[in-house]
Each structure stands twice: as structure tokens, then as C-alpha cells.
Length: 436
Image 1: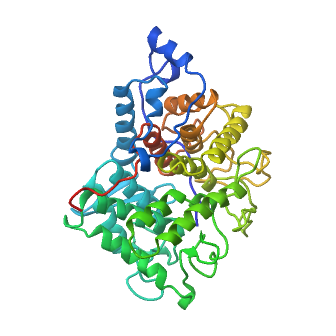
Image 2: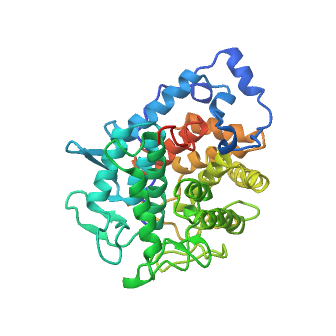
Image 3: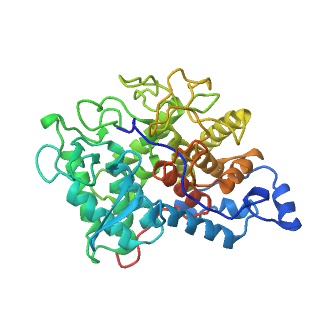
């Protein structure tokens, strides 16, 4: 249900920069110029307990990296053009302000950011709001969430779920249980299990299904009659299924590991062998899936795929060869157009689409910050010298309105913040603390 995004641009005011986004002395410039080929790590954080700080490897100062992360978080969550809004003394929501709604996507992204950055109050506020206003408490959809709501009227725009929201909520809550325990006001593990157990109880009653198509072991587009038999490549997060296998403890560990492996193989089929591009929606075979509202192409949902593959590489590195090849393909394709000029919608072969999906009232192709960010995160698995240039492009990017006034502090902002976290080593597997 992500076909109406309002995209790019954010309010991120940085100091005017010269070389690669900051003033460099001669020694620092020499380090950056002499970086050579990117050398991805051979093992993931699950084994090593370590996460790459690609920005540091690129020659940027740790103090500047820390400041960039703080600034990115502040602009999205605290600044004058923020998307995070507190309600009373115990709740908050993340709004797709361009579309004037709140989505499970944004709420669950906000919770992931909060648990990664150890911001318990933000996490708890978002969860309280999500549970109070979006989670179905009875009926066939019990345990699932309405995917969109008007934050002013609190009226659901849709009662149905978008499967990625629940996917993130479950993982967020498992990480929260590991980080903060379950005796600090919210039993995070119990809340995660409630969603999972509800998922497994769905048998088609009222048209409500499992989040996962059990036969294909793949996440559905929507867990209902409409979207149960096709999918969205950007929902395929093998790393999350690995986390479920480790921490859900519901007796379905092997099934979740199978889902992780299946997701990896699905992405092999869904991504074009030359350009690396995938369609927004797909069949379980990986073939593009067109809908009544638009023909299949690489569009806004698709931007998330490079970041998701990079996450799986960073955390588990179980599909190294193909993931490195994927990074080469998509970065080669986009750099061939121009690292500072590539646009944001394509046919899978790289040609311009006949149909351009509008966002926020603007119907045009642009060099979108969200895609700049996620393709930069693919440098975690990059093997070429040009991978550094994508990192530099993200470092130099600004969260601010485009020249035509288009501005989206929601989707661009969250993808920007996620990618800064990945490339600074601040997006990690959160393992249990000793007393939990």
C-alpha cells in the first residue's frame, strides 16, 4: 500500500562545504584521493559483533560523523520540519506530512531508529500510539494494524494491513526486549509474540491471512485476499527473518530461516541482471507485477532494496558473492547516468518509464535524496573504487527542499537517516542484555 508516497527532499541545513561536503586539509584530501577499491568485510555483525564505519574508512573525521548523525536525527525528529509529533505525556506518531496521514511504515521505522539509537522514551511513545490507534483488538484482523490513519480525526484510511509494517513492528519489539528488558513499563517480547501468534492464527476468516505466504515462504504485499499471492521486493528483509529465528522463540525457527534464504533467492530473481533494478511489486517468481494504478517499474518502494540488501550483508553476510555483484550492477548503472544526476524511476532495463508516478502533487523525475541515500548504503558491500563516490555523494547531500519547492521530510528523511546509520556503523543487531 505504498503507491502514493510523497517523496524527496528534506530540511537539513549543513555548513557550506567545499570538498566532499566538508573543509579538508591537504592530508585529509590525500587520504580520500588514495582510497582505492572498496573492500567489504567477509563476515557479518552476527558473528563478529562489529559493524563497518564506512564514513570513517572514507577519510571523514569521527567527530564530523557523529555530528552528521545527530543532525540527521534532529531534523527528522526534532527540528522545525520534523515528522515526529508527541501527544500528551506518553504517545507520539511519525507522519507522512505530505500525504497528511500516519502509516505503519513510518511508525515502525521510527521505532527501529529509536531502539538503534537507545531512545527508549521515543520508542515507547510510538508503540503506545500505534497500539492505541492502529492495532485491531478484536475480529478477524486482531493483532494486525490498519496501515493508514488520519492523525487529526483518528479515522482509519484503511482497515487492512501493509505487511512490512508488521514485519518491522515485530523486529522492533524483539530488539527492544533485548535492549531494555521487559520490566520497564512494556513487555516488548509479549507484544512481539502477540503479533506473531495472531499472524499464525489467521486462516482466511474475514479474508485475513498470514503475513507470510506459507506455501512460498515469502512476505505478502497485504495479508488478505487482495495481496496474499504477490509481493513487494522492498518488503523482503532476510535479516529480519534471521532475527525472528533467534529471538521470537515460538517454535518456528527453521521456518523463519527458510524464509530468510527464500528472500535472498527471490531478490536474485527480482533484480535485473545488468542494471540491478527491481519493480515496486512482483510475483513470487520475481517477475514484475503491474497493478490497476500503475505499470511495473522501479519506483519509490524500490529505493529501499539496496539498503535492505546492505543490511543483510552487514548483519549476516550469508550471500556475499551475489550481494557484491548486485552492488556493482546498480552502482555501475547509476554512475553511468551520473552520480549527481541519476533520476528516481526507471524501467528495469534502465530506460525511462512511460508512466511517471507522482508524489506530493509533483509528477516528475528527479535526483531524489532517498535513492541517493540507499544506493550509498550499498557501498557496505561495494568492491569498486566508485563505491566511495556514492558515499561521498550521501555525505554531501542536504535535506532541504528542491529547486521547484518539492519537499518530503518523511520518506526521503527516514531513508536518509537509515543510510547515515548504516554507513556510520550505527544500525546493528541488538542482542540480549545479560539480565534479560
